[in-house]
Image 1 (cartoon, rainbow, N blue to C red):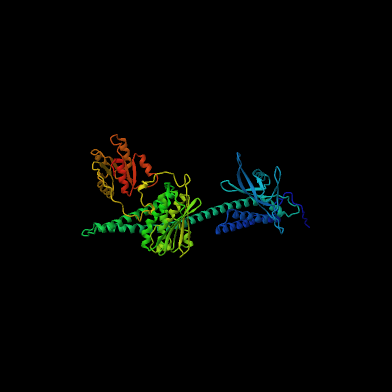
Image 2: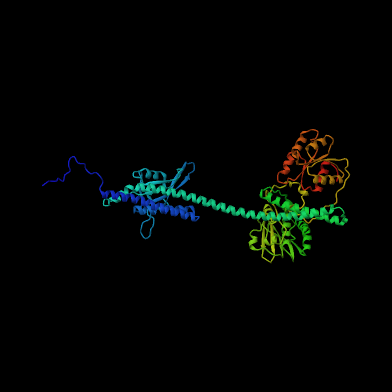
Length: 621
């Protein structure tokens, strides 16, 4: 019988392949790793998807990601020995920048109370007991990261910015555990490295989501505000177009009647037509002044003139301006003055403008009954209360009443005049004066608007004290609508000054004709030229006592011409008065710096023009 030996032949090879059980355990360990990572990836994706659907707070969203990472790794390694930190950068006084981390999550026990436990870690220098909100310094985190095996993994983005740390406590393996657990322990470092990478990616994606959500919300809010502003401005343009076309229709129409061949109205009719033309022109000027006033106020360029005002006299003057409109509507005007109030310090033109805006509004929304003004003392302040028995204002409209361009819907639908700027300008003027405007109203129960102003002005409130008004305030009739109801101008102050030559440099034909006719009726000799070239030709033949200079000329800038005149000994002493449509803050100073003697804004106030010409020509008026 043939014998078989159980010993291997000396020349045979030993099968060194791993046992099937070992291979299966390694495969299971590898599958455990990939399955855990896939589960973590899936849970993080759910977090990000949730963040996309809502607008979470950054802290809450990151907390959800941190908690997810802790839970999934705990589940994978079947232990409660994990922590997450977030990083903060602090700067101590006179010390370099220092980065520290705060423990934001410590894995919870599986007990019923589920309170966070401390996490015990051993570094090269000391034992760390990490609890929730515990501060751990950067050097200890780096030690945990560099020790073998590592116990900390940083969460750093592509730019090297550290957002936090993932920490795990290392516990000795129980020798009784299965070999699979040992193999999993060997892969634990890979699990932590790749988990940290997944967590980092999720944090970066979350921050991108939050950033774009905030940007979207900001853009959405901006678009809504722009749309609302656009609607208000469209409404403003429509109202302004109506306001401009109405007086222009009167101006053009009545001018056409006066110029029509074969139509010879009586002198009384002519006077009536001219009064309408003048009133319509002042209405246009008031509209323009409202727009300019709001622009100046918002640009902090409005100048005010502080004066001691006679309150009873100013209120009487204001009532005189609204008396005719009240009479036309059959309304009674009531004025009640506190006898103890005699004066206050304010800008008289602007105070008149504020009161007129409130009174004209009251008249516009009152069809029967009365409109009144009450002036009462309230400590250091004086209350100007304009009341009416009109339609009243809803609470919804009151909330927007003082916003630029806003108009009450029923007023717009009813064809009420106005641009929606009056109350906005009034409130801003009151604030410049150190005061305010309040409103009390109920629908169908009338309204009460109270302008609150201090009796005295502190230094620096509302502008520089004593500043000269732009364009010569003494002739600025009807600023902000203050002169809409004024009567026609007084008769021309004729004088005999036939020997006085005036050189008028003006590009606009109608304005030139107006000033020529007016000054010639005063007895002046006026030579009109249209541009710079003609001015130099005229100066070679004339010796004018005053030059009236337009700023905008077709072949040059009027201010540069003034500078050239001042550089020429022959002409440097001739007084120059600039007439210009520029009316913003600093324009007057710019003109004076160029060598101009005085400044008058368009539309030209003829009496003011006569006064300035007489002043510099030394001719009596």
